[in-house]
Image (cartoon, rainbow, N blue to C red; front, side):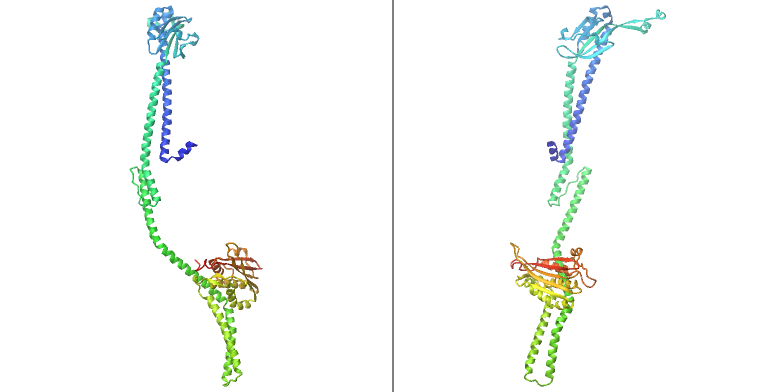
Length: 543
C-alpha cells in the first residue's frame, strides 16, 4: 500500500523512469542469473568430460601393465598423468580391486581419498561427483581396463598384421583406471566469472538508467515548459507561447498549443469588447422590459375598465338624469317670467340636489380616472385597504346587480395601513371581482372580507383580503396554471389570460402572495396577502 501511494505521488516523468529502470534491472538480473548458471554448468560438464577422457586414455595405455601387473610401468603412467591440470590423484587397480599404482598431487595423501568401490563401474567409463574425506570437491572418473583377444579364421591365418587389427576381437575387463580431478580451480573460475558478469550487469543497469533518465528528461523538458505555460494561461496570462521542438510529435503539440493560445487571446479580446457595451445593453433591455411590463399592466387595466364600463355608465346616468330633470324644471319655471317668493326655497332645493348629483358624478369619474391612469413605481405610500376596496365596489356595483350577484362585505375596522401602490392593488381587486362575476353566470353570492394577522416575533403580520364566490370552481389541473401568462379557460374574446398573471406579479412586487382554494361546482376563494412593513423598511418604490 505504501509503495502504491508512493507511485501515485510521483509525476509521470519519474513514473516512466521508474518503470524503465525496473524493467532494465529485472531483465539484466534474469540474464545474469541465466549466464552464470549456464557457465557454471558448462564448466563442470567440461571438467567431467576432461576427467573421463583422462581415465579412458589411462585405461588404454595401462592395458599391458595391468595384465602383467608391472608396477614400474604403471607408476610411469600415474606419475605422468598426475601432473596434468587439476588432476589430484591417479589410481590403477586390478580386477580384484587391488591397488597396483597410485599417483598423488602435492598435498594429497591416500588417507584423504575415498575408498574405491568396483561396483560403481559396470561398463565403459563412470563419472560422478565426489569429495575428499577432509573436504574438497572432485570429479571421480573410472574406466575399465580391458584386454582384447582377436578372433581369426583359417583364411586369416596367413594375412598381414593390418588384417589382424581389423578383425573381430573379444574384450575382457582386467582392471580399473581411476582419475580424480579437483573442482577448486573451476570454482575459482566460476566465481571470478560470476563477479565479472555481476559487475557488467550493474554497469549496464546504471548506464541504461542514466540513458533512460536522459531521454525522459529530453522528452519531458518541452512538456514541462508547456505545463508551465498552461498554468500561466489558467492564471489569466494568455500571452504565453511555447517553443516548437525538433521532435515531430511534440512540435505538432506545440503548434496546436500556440494556436489555441491565439484563439483564446482573440476570444478574450472579443469578450472584453463585448463587456464594455454589455452593461449599456442590459440597461436598455431592462428599460424595454419595464416599459413592456407597464404596458401589459395598463392594457389589462383598460380591459377591466371596458368590462366595468356598463356599470360605470349606469352609475353616471342616474345622477345625470336627476340633474337634467331639475335643470329642465327650473328652466320651465323661469320661462313663465315671474317668480314667487315661495319658489326660492324650491330653487335652493333643486340646486342642492344638482350639486349633490354632480359631486357623485365627479367622484365616479375621479375613481374611474384614478383606476385607469398609468401607475409608476414611485407612487408607493401608506393607504387604507378598506377605502380602496370601497372605491372598487363603487364602479362595479351596477355590474354586480346586472349579473344578479349579491355582495356581502366584512371589512375589519382595526385594519392597519399597508405600504404600496393603491392604484395597482385596486386593479388586482377589480380583476378578482371580474373573475368572480364571470364564474357565476347565473348569479350567486360574493363574500369579501378583510382581516389582520397579528405580528409574532420578527414577523410584522399581514393584511388579508378574501374573495369567496359560489361559482363553477377551478379544476386541480388548472390550479397549477392559473397564474401563467395567456392561460385562460374563458371563451375566445372574453379574456386575454393576463389578468391573474399581472395581478400575481403586482402582489409579489408588494412582497405578498395570492392563495387559491377551489372546489369544482362549489366555488373558489382568492386570498390576497399583503405584508405589514415599517416605514423605514420601504421608503421608495419596489426594486
